[in-house]
Amino acid sequence: MFKFACDSIEGLTLNQKRETLKALKESIKADAARAREAKIALKTQKAESAEVRRANAIAKAQAKLDKLLSKPVGSKAIKANRKPSKVTTLQVEAREANEIARKFASKKTA
Image 1 (cartoon, rainbow, N blue to C red):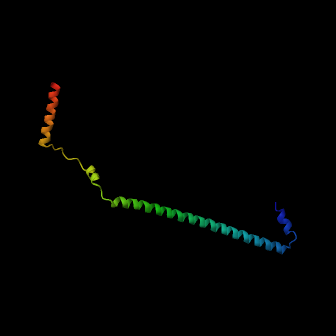
Image 2 (cartoon, rainbow, N blue to C red; image 1 turned 180 degrees about the vertical axis):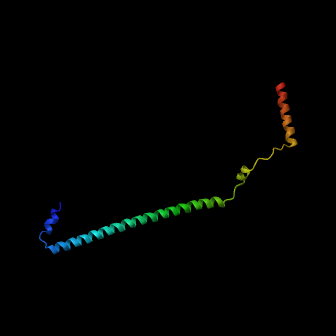
């Protein structure tokens, strides 16, 4: 498995091998630190973008609410929400209705 590495370090002295091992460990530490920093940067970037999306959604909802609240309520909506008043009939309408009813009654009997 490490045959290629073993062949290249066979001719080295003990001190050279120690220095190589030390440099390799430093390289591994640096790579691990870079990977950790990249992971943290990605996590903070995701959190920031989520915060921006959340703020945009709140702003959009607030704009819709402000738009709805700024409009005056229409007269049709006001009329629809009122209680119906008592029915009042005028004498003229009552007389006309009676005449129409008499005409229908006379047609039925005839």
